Length: 187
Image (cartoon, helix red, strand yellow):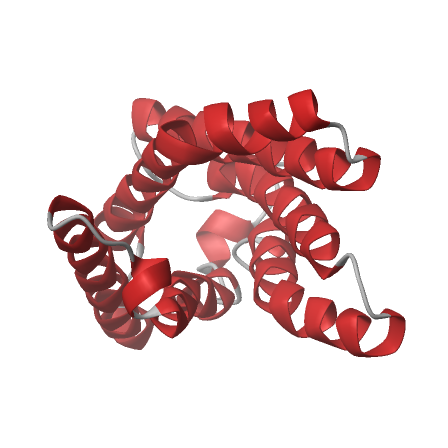
């Protein structure tokens, strides 16, 4: 397997929404805390998994730093929801959760595109192009809505689910077998 850590990260990120929905049905509240905890765990795993891919060192560090910072922000958001502290909630959502979170997601998207172009191949590369093109299109649409004075939440919140497509692609990319010469350990 190319990246067990990447596979685990992608699965955690893809299952976060269904698990939160199930939690909401069973418990009745605090599903947003579950979402942010899942995003924090998946992002933390991903910050380590980027080292499993063959990209330039500086690209790898951009991927690791951006997803590591996202993990910290999502964890802070989960904790702020649990504690119900106004100052902490303001810090987590208004200070870190606006521009900074979006910029870090853009940096992660850059890493995905770089990895797609450098380290992906075959059918998973085609799937990656489709996934990243759709996610990028949704991102551009959200920028247009912001420019026009609206938001994705106001106009088409369901489109945000398309941001999960890169993680679906990562499931396939991470499970590819490495060529024998790359997976062999030196003796």
